[in-house]
Image (cartoon, rainbow, N blue to C red; front, side, top):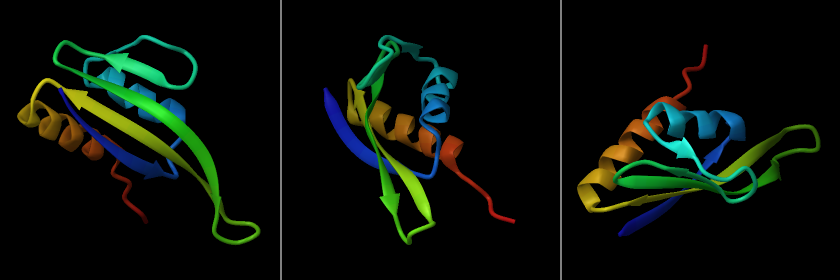
Length: 90
């Protein structure tokens, strides 16, 4: 089992969970850590905290843990998850 943790900022926790489901996982828990399981991988929304950059500019930061059977599966999972979190400014 290989594991990697990343932090995602400014994306609602509900959306991060939805991305795991769109990639084929099923939600297993409904409190922290939120656990999503698929056949060869799992994902966890481990923690969420609020970061303040100024008195009025605050964003959330969610720690996400990715677990997979091997490195190739893990790399593909993270690549697909990051694609879903891409935001294009305008």
